[in-house]
Image (tube, rainbow, N blue to C red; front, side, top):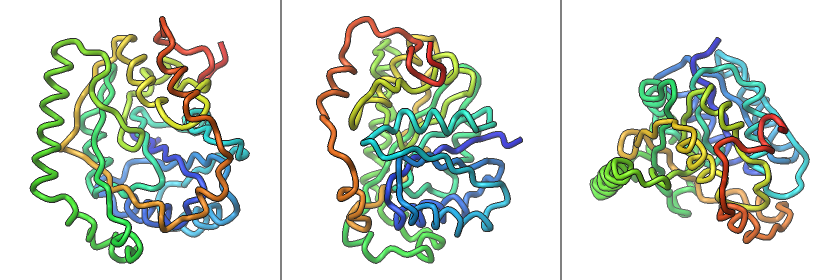
Length: 268
């Protein structure tokens, strides 16, 4: 059984997914399983997954649901149900992990803890020319400039300060760079599937983990992913069913949020 389960969400971004999977193929740490949580992509995404399966020592698992708009919370929960690792790494299929991404999460995520890291935006012009060969050469690392390293360090120390002060909405969290101990994810019942539309499900997960007493760990500056511009996959916007973006925000700010959600991995 793999120590780590990497659950990456995707929707109709086959070109970005190829770059993402190339990054996972090149990881320095190999003891992980890869689960693709597919929020309703068409057959092109499935073809990319089949293309990459022979390139990994461990099986790539693929869980899919029909396209009814943005339902990332639900499909990631479905991915978790077929995962086996003690450390669950949550990320997105339009990001490229640095080569030590899984290793650093595996080393830092412990029982009753969750970790968060940062991301770096790749320019649209660069993404147009980005190939799997360039990913294998880690060419994208040039976007991690000295200035960005400094800003990551500042964010890391700010996170530590706010955590020490007991601020519950820290550390800053993005769904492309999170890891959590399996039993902690189960304790809060995973993602809240009542989130309808884009955004806030990751912040809600962080808040509920903290309410449950799970210790936050900031990995800003230690591990990061590189975000691929959606310009290389125009299909994502053409095929996404429009949703009211305000619904997720309104639900996030509801009063008296319990640590364990009702509509999560289990429906209770």
